[in-house]
Image 1: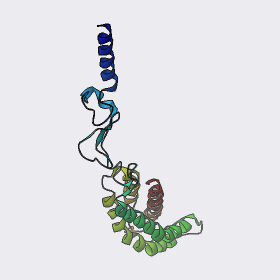
Image 2: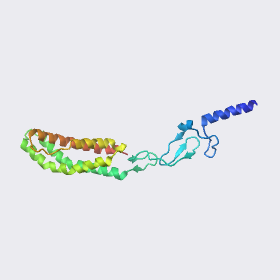
Image 3: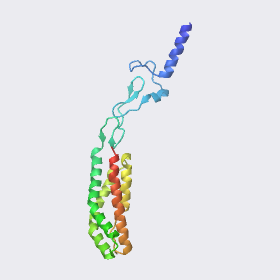
Image 4: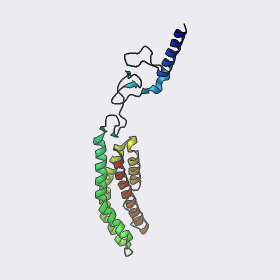
Length: 199
């Protein structure tokens, strides 16, 4: 009788500690709701899985990321979309560098006059204007992807600073244009740098 009681206690303790059978075929001990911490969530490689016996239920789950390398399957998700964003940011940086450099050179030259500023703005304004659509397209591509939130934030800021050609070409308007052009360019570069951290 003593042996039977001890065996019963040991069996109850085993069920309490383990919560399920030792193998996927040995399910008589069951999987209860209080054993949730013993389960691995479903991912792209396996359905929900018991961490003790390996029993699975349900279907395959999602990748660990929507953009970038999934930690489960090691495949880059939404690679085409990401490559397009990176290519557009690279082109923007390359295309606007000379324009921004010219503006900053004139702004930093103490001999520059308002006529020089106005001429520089007339020269670079078309370069900036033709790139605005590309910048706005990057915002659309970034969408609501969490992995692209930092890039999107920099591009939104770049759009905010996007230089608008002054109508009157007054001293203050010219300075604002040159400052905005530089800020816009800097935020585009920041966004491009941040693409390196999406892996």
